[in-house]
Length: 193
Image (cartoon, rainbow, N blue to C red; front, side, top):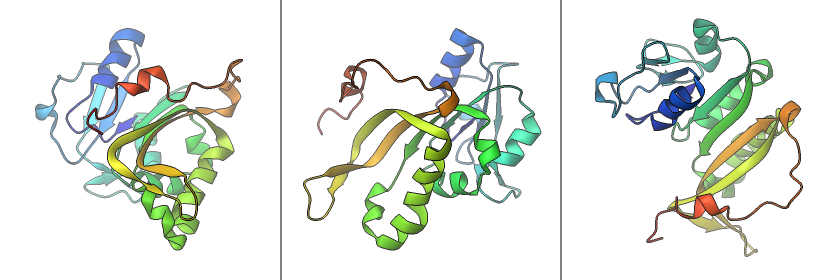
């Protein structure tokens, strides 16, 4: 399930071609005719809707979307929805989230955690909810949009962070410490930054 494709579905194409994994995509900002690559029949679906907490004419909730597609087995969620990830994850039941073996998402606007009400009511509960069922297995600081410093520290946090989570029942600790930054991430940043 891939909300927020924005005309580009190379990841979903790779999953179909390499692993035979079907993808269901949604994004209200584009039309299927505008995609850089055409839908793969029988492997990919697209609905022109926002992923949002309340279903409507132009939106669909994650739970409703799963009910409509009726997928079997473990699922993968790839989400890049420009800040709406917070309300969508927070509104989705633990049972629905547990259907996903892997969640790949970009977290936006982390600088807002400096505002105590947003940290306490949105950002902290978002990460706490994910941490109950998932382990972070990859973190890529996206340098596209700057960073911020936690007051009274020298800790710098990017405004955007790309994260991959693995459900606890599939997590096995690696024997070696994590490579930070990971060699594959270095070339993915904006070079002039």
